[in-house]
Length: 392
Ligand code: AN7
Image 1: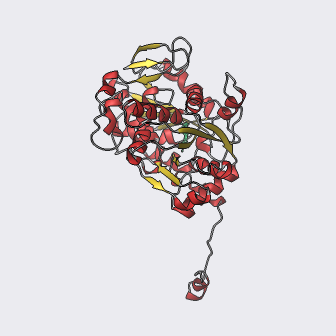
Image 2: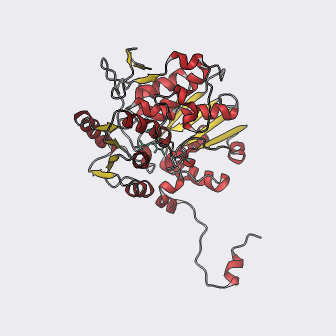
């Protein structure tokens, strides 16, 4: 395996502790050995480890991650003028988010180097996932979260799995900066944020699954962007499946951010060589991120694929979250509803096969539902009041 820099084309042999380019500082990518592609990808088994031939580890602590449902959404598709709309429901993963795909691989590497503990900064899902896989592997987990800005379901999972939690008085970007500095000083601590390219290798399996289920690549993939690891991982996955001869064309990648936390949308618009907004704010706390570490990879994915990036408001996110649950039965967290909100707003009529990535489960953030239109009433314990509720 090789580490490769997408910015300056630097290459060096893979090692599990090198994350950024020594020449230009850009997060590196892991390139599997060419033989892995020559073998044509004889995949076996299910889930993330089905694709072990293209991963930087052969096996790892597992909870049955991957193999999530790709659900056809005819009712919403029709409304958006789309002939074929699918939602890939990553909430079906063991801890309820796509992060599990990367963690099973990332924790495998941590075990490989004999790390005593793993660490991350997180808006919640990375923490919950890392805590679960660390527990599975029998090592310690240390998470840094922005104080008061993590959805309750995610925090509960992290507490239950026995992680050490530091509530940093600041936002995610402060926590991220701190954990990178900490991990650089403490060699017994293995960093599992998406600046670690090995985690993204696990996440690319999402793209493989979509292609295998559909028998080809979709025309368009729409997903939320926070640190922008996932869009980078998916784009890499599609390109590798093309290299294998498994798909002919590549999809257009569309990244969606919340209006109050949209540094990548802004950077793409400006053609800027920096990517940051101060004090990001959105109800979708998962993507409340102002300085995404993988922004260069995301910009490359969007440009190379002929895709785009755009924003949605919190109100649009909430409405889309409600639509997807009430019309299709898929209850996803606010960040995961951003692609649906974008489809409604943007209108991609005639776009062909569109796949939205629903990155996390709705139960992650139960409180936010109090802002949905509710059809609840308190009733006296008698049939009369109940019969009033029945649609005629
Ligand atoms: C549900 O958990 O950054 O663009 O620390 O939880 O790959 O960062 C979460 C991100 C989208 C954005 N949807 O993915 C964290 C964290 C959900 C998420 C994203 C996140 P990236």
